[in-house]
Image 1 (cartoon, rainbow, N blue to C red):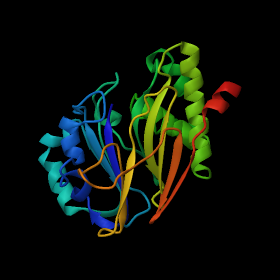
Image 2: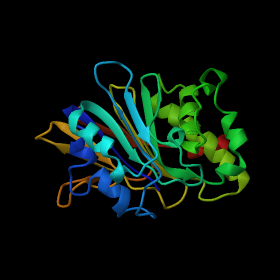
Image 3: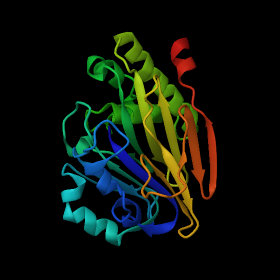
Length: 263
């Protein structure tokens, strides 16, 4: 399982989330505490929004703790909205194209979890990606395929419904292949204006998800694991879709299951 962190609010240095906290994302890359694998060393990535509509993107295959360029970058770059990810592969190769986040236009996306039996129906999953978006298929992960399918399902106009429909399609393929758990999913994605997050699973193993507002920073962190002990982190329940817009938080039910059963 991967670890990730996102932020939205007043601009801060990326290091305030990625490297400075006591249980920062870089620390989680070799000492995670709330997932099956404590080491997440199969690459890392950052997507951040600045002066342009499209996010900047930096990804590499090194362990996050061993890349001095990453530490220098997060110490110098400020952003009002960014996504950061450390990867533990569930089967696909360790390569830059398989590192999260994934970016298409002004949208960026990152994922923690798995689609059960993906290797057995990968070709069918890729057929869900519209021709107009297939040129953006750079790697081999289920995560990137899910993102591109959600874009094809109308992510631009319907960020929740498109992800529900895409997740339902992947869940249906997994159920047909007979591999469980069929879906375990926490994801964050953004169009540069709002930050969205999902926590969902077809079993009891939904990966963890938390968020916390900081009055001093005037911003919100959304994370796989709390970044500091003793802070008031709010856990997101399974089966939830979250919208983070400034200080406002909206949590709705996330319901792809009924769609997949009806498909």
